[in-house]
Structures are given as C-alpha cells and as structure tokens.
Image 1 (cartoon, rainbow, N blue to C red):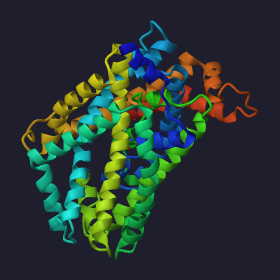
Image 2: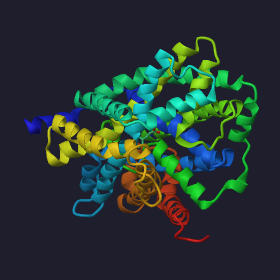
Image 3: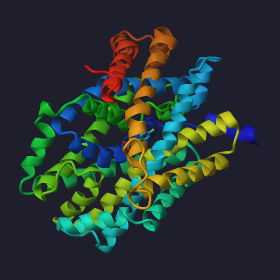
Image 4: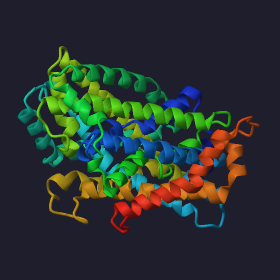
Length: 457
Ligand code: PFF
C-alpha cells in the first residue's frame, strides 16, 4: 500500500508546459509580492533597495532557482532524497533537511498573514474596510492582529484549505488552481495600478519607487534585499527542487527560470505601483511595516467606483496567490515524509499542518498574548521571518550553488541544462555556471557576514 503511494508520487507530474509555468509561478507569486515586497521596500528606503533587489534576483537567486530545478528533475525526488541520490554517503542531504525546516518556519508566519487576507475578503464584502479614513482602516487592522480567536481561526482555515488540496494529489491539484487564477490576478492588479496612479499626489509614490537615493544603503539593507530575492523566487530551501521533480524531461528549465523570474518581478513592481502612490496620497508613512497592504489598499478601492466588489475580488485573488505559494511550501515536508519515511500522503499532510498550527500560533499571538516574548530583540513573527529570509535561505543558496559548481560539475550540469541535446551555443550555460561556482557563494557569504555584523567592510 505504502509502496503504491510512493510509486504514484514518483510518476505523477505537471501535465503541460503551461501547467509547469503556472505552478512554478504560483509558488513564486504570493504574499511576497503583494505584502512583503512593498513593505520591506518601504522600510529600506525605496528605489535604491529595489535596484539591489533586482541585481540579487538576476545574478544570485535566479541561478540558484535553476540549480534547484535541475537537481529535482534529474533525480525525481524530494529535497533530501535528491541530494542523497546525487551524493550518496555525503553530508549534502543536510541541505535538504535545512530546506524542510525552513519551509516549516516560513509556513508558521506565512499562514498568519494569509489568514489576515482571507479575513479581509469578508471584511471587504460586509463593508467594514470600505472607508477612505486612515483611522478607520488602521483601526480595523489593529483590531484583527491584537485579537486572539479571529486570527487563529483564519490561520487554521488556511492550513485546512492548503492541506486538503495537497492531499488530493500533487501536481494536478496545484496545476489546475494556478493556471486559471494567475492571469486574473495580473489583470486586477493592473486596474488597481491605474486607480492608484490617478490619486492626487501619486507622483510622490512613484518617486519613492523609481528615484534611487543611495545614502540609505547599508549592509543590513543589502542583506534584506538578498533575503527578499530568495524568498520571492521560493529558493534556498528545496521548493524548486521538489517542483523540479514534477517537471518533464523535455521542458526547457533555463527558459522556465527566466520566465518565472521576469513575471514575478513584474508582479512585485505592479504591487509597488498599487500601494506607494496611495501611501503618499493618504498621508501614511512608507515604513509602516507589515500593515501597509491592509491599510492602504482598502482606501484605494474605497475611493473608486464599484470599489467594494473589486476589493472583494482583489482579496480573493491575493488569497489564491498566497495559497499557491503555501502549496509549494507544504509540499516540501510532505514529499520528504512520504518518500523518505514512507508515510502516506494523508498522514504526512495532517502531521505537518498540525505541527505548523502549533508553532504558527506563536507567530499569530506575537501581537497579542505573546507580545512580550522576544528572541534576539524580535517578537516570534519577526524572528521566524528574519531567521528564514535573512539567514536560512541565503545559507541554503550558498550550498545549492556550491553543490552544482563544485560537486556536480559542468558536464553533468550541462546534460540537464540542455536536456541532453547538443546546443550550438553554450554561452548561457557557461555564464550560469560561473555565477553558481564563484559569484553566488562569495557574494552571499560576504553579504551575510557583513549584514549580520560579523564582518566590517
Ligand atoms: N515566493 C513566495 C512569495 O513570494 O510569496 C513565498 C515562498 C513560497 C517562499 C515558497 C519560499 C517557498 F519555498
């Protein structure tokens, strides 16, 4: 019985090229674009931060993403199993273990924020957040996060929805949901952008987004940009390794990585254009932090015709985007438990979501009951976020890059890169290999050490 389950997982995969792009993009596009990118940009000074983020994405996080996709597809296995297959009897599998742990910790706070989004669908529908008064939208958000029962309920709701989809089959469930909803999200974001740009004082927001001021840049800012670049493309923790294992041998992985990176970046910038003009127009501060999305966006919708139904639709789509990313997070420990520990998919999923609910509740309650509990000067929510984005994912990135550059080697990498075909032009493969062999490990290491204050440059 367990063997059948295992075999089924091994054989199942994404069924079409479009499905592959949708699912991979479904993992990349999520709260990271619409919630995290704008608020972290706001906290770190705007355009100059975005520029560094773009460089980190192009030169570091995208090459790591491609490395993970290749490792996963080559081995057809979960993050731990993949590295075990490629380097048996060597400690590389620990990189997969660290990925499983990272996925778990990210889910702890991600489900909290996803829960806020789900609750906002209802708040938008009944009109609680239909207001152009900053005090009103701010008060609603504060009311939510300082509560206990309401945010916990929504967090568990998110876990149950995601767990149900994951239990009902790997690729097919994921693929079907993301293929339809990604394009709709895109269109809606475009509408919000137009409205936001028409607000009086919008130009101030655009200046903040596109006119760099490098005086705000420090190593901790660069580390935040690098961490965001990893978080955004879901790399450094085995998600793309796991998804790579569901991708067919004929798919062009470099092209997938490029497309996903470009589309994901576009969605982030579009979210920035939706939010920052409104921040300035309504007199908020760009460095208001995690609440930014939840207090500004309702005001943009409330100031436009048919704002209420549009706002409901917007939060539905953000919820869907968050769910797509959640599916990929949950898939990492589930695939690991099923393949390495021979659990059934059902037991693996139920066990993981129960554990996330337990640990995640400490993130959710960090703005209420547990607000006095601090780790390294941060509440639990911020601690999980910092530990994953700014430490575990960059560390994972270093080792994935080192693995391909130094352990796997060019020839084996190139076979996977080119789908075992003779390419006339190896230029892109050579550039990619140079990036993962030298540039990524050295750059990440320096930024990590300097950003955490261990190295004075
Ligand atoms: N990339 C997702 C987002 O931007 O919302 C978050 C995420 C998903 C991070 C999956 C890591 C991951 F493995």
